[in-house]
Amino acid sequence: MMTEYGFELSESWLVEKLENTKWPEKSIQGTPWYAIMCNPVYVEGFAWLGPHVKDRGLYIKDTDDDPDNNHQQSDVVSVLMNLGSIPDFVAS
Image (cartoon, rainbow, N blue to C red):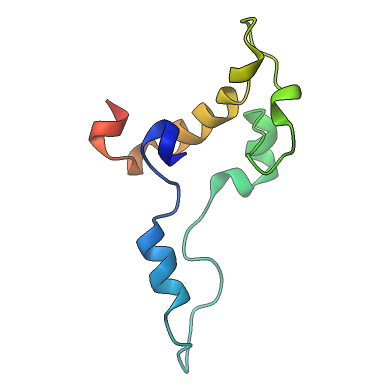
């Protein structure tokens, strides 16, 4: 997503910091952020296919004749769902 839209859904500095953090004696367990597109209700509602789906462009049909941009339907859903955390220069 960085090359096409100018941002990532998870900040690389945060992931690196979490990977290098020592396990505390008392800890909160679970994921440090919530990805709404991990919820099957929203995945189905938005007809979202993530980049982990092999050949996802074959499953997505849009209104133009260019098969190389079919993946953008799902990418735009990801962008819009995270619009509040996208830097202003990217959103505009």
